Each structure stands twice: as structure tokens, then as C-alpha cells.
Image (cartoon, rainbow, N blue to C red; front, top):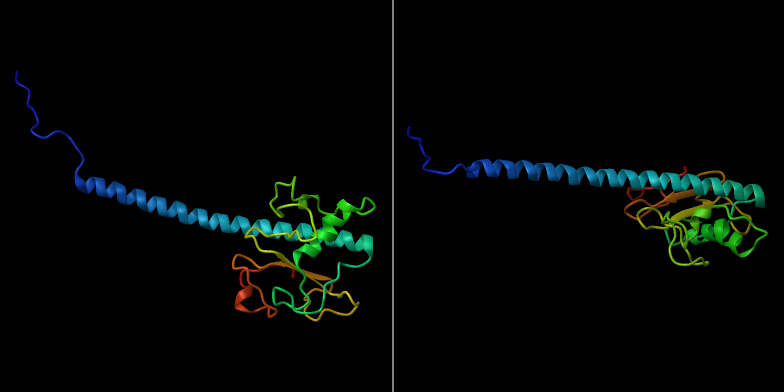
Length: 186
């Protein structure tokens, strides 16, 4: 009995290989695009949680001190009037309690050395800033300024706290295009 032998060994055709490669590329593109969306959503949620924690700490600060930390009623580095840097928040919510044992540490997660939250970096000093998930400073504006007068730009009756979002831009006008990605407590 004779066996038939093939003239050509079994192999994939070029069209079959191209079809498989195309499917792999399409699936990889979907995964990469999905990961970008998930990472952005996760950063927004993290910023929302951080703003809620900072807001709670500011409420506790007011209960203890009788007033929210005041800010100046003049344009700040973020072009929003009466806006203070996050270094002000770091000082009153963490650093003052670290340096003076009679004062309270309101947000222990702000510890730049031991915390794994990533809110702050370096060492604890008056220049330490609290950053959002995109590396921008949080913005803070109290309703009452350092002189005891009213901050004209405040939206809330107590204080405004917000992240400038991914683009790192903000504006006094709420419907301005720079505010589209801002995350606010108001």
C-alpha cells in the first residue's frame, strides 16, 4: 500500500497571518484605549475623595479654631481672586500640629515622609504643597480674608476647595473653558 505524500508542507497562508495580526492589533488598541479611560476615571475619583477629606479636615479646624484658614482677597497664582496655595492648607492641617504638640494634626495622610498617598513630596515645611492626582496644587479660598472682610470670589458661604484637573488651568468664571475638568466642592 502506497501512502500519498504532500508536495507542500502544511503552513499558514499570508492572508491567514495578516488576519490574525490585524485582530491582535485591534484588540491591543481597545485595551490601551480602555486603560486610559480607566486611569482618568480613577484619578477623578481620587481627587473627589481627597477634596472630601480636606473639606472634612477644614470643618474640624473651624470647630477648633472658630474660623476657616483665611486667604487674601487678591488674585493669586491661579488667577482666581482670593485663592491661596495648597501650602497654606498643608501648614494649618498638618505642619502646625507636627511642630506644636498643643495643636492637632487634622490630616495625618499629608505626612510627606511616611504617607503612601502621594499628596505631598519632600519634607514637611511651609513650602510643601498638596497635589492632586495630576500633580497640580489644590486651590483653596475662604469666604473671610485675613483682614476679616469678605472674599468676593467665593462661591460657597464657607470656603471653596478645588482641583484644577488634568489641564492644570482654572478661572474665576465658572463656565469658562478652563474649568471644564475642574473638580470642586461647590
